[in-house]
Image (cartoon, rainbow, N blue to C red):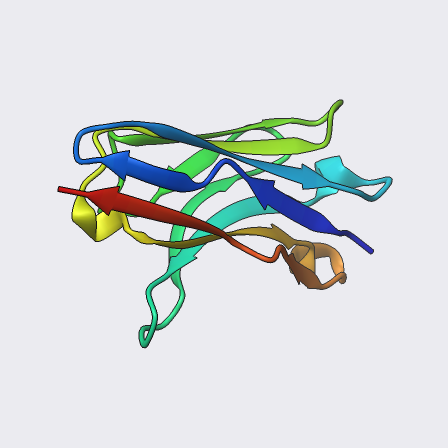
Length: 118
């Protein structure tokens, strides 16, 4: 089982930057594909970025070139560096650990609020 705790959210002005962190527990962290999702109230949760245990990354088109996902398998941490933020990035950001490709489950953190003001 994996437990995830996000941190680093807050209020930032348009054009600013934030770095989100996700601390994970579990002995086989490297085996999980780690994702960041975000959700605006009243809308479906949206996938933002993915990093595999081998450090392969993918991004949603809406954040490509502005956000960078990374992981530290030794520290069991996942990061999301967010640059050039705009109001459309305002959301609750969730860390996700996906083990379904090898028969485990998906796990979610509690979320961290990011608010971008103009």
